[in-house]
Image (cartoon, rainbow, N blue to C red; front, side):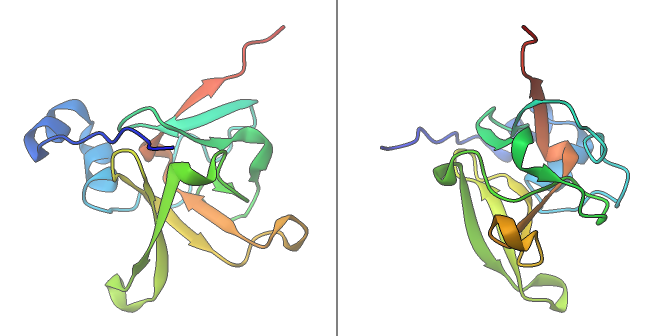
Length: 136
């Protein structure tokens, strides 16, 4: 199943994203811990890529990691994200990017809840939008 990719010029991304979103999504920046709008979001819904709208994470898999960033145990659709080895900043980490637009979302670590697979997808709030589940 081929996912349609979104490709834009740097100028287009700069125009469409806020400076903070651009820094994170296109330059692999990181928002400061505990500053993101979704750190304490407990509403039901779906987290989507702020760059292209792809569905990334479901609120059911969000957990309190204490890290200061929204954390999830797994992507909503495995194919929605791509992981890459990141050796920047003198650390070896696993970067998580949106497969559709290549936007940097955050990193995945292996210190998540053991009973849910042990992974912690540590995401930047500004790299995502939140679509609340419509109430009955």
